[in-house]
Image 1 (cartoon, one colour):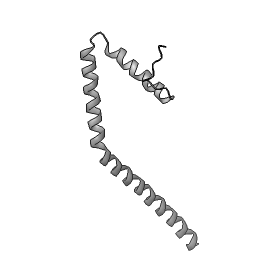
Image 2: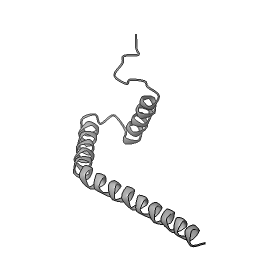
Image 3: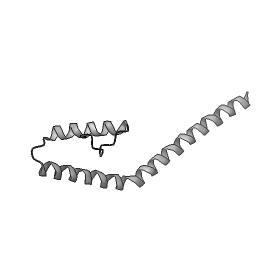
Image 4: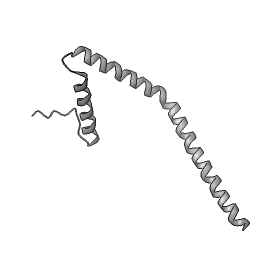
Length: 86
């Protein structure tokens, strides 16, 4: 009976330590990548603002819809840089 109890306890402790290990790894990865991610977010916000300021005929909602369509196409392997007009 003692052997069965220790096996369950060992499994529980191993599982707990494994979850803690994964959580710590996720935290470290997030901490390391956060400055780069924030820089990219700021850069994209500036590019978006500059684009909408330069092309005032484009409505913000239409631009958002266009971006969503491009991202969806990209997920399916379509390269938006390709010229489809020919």
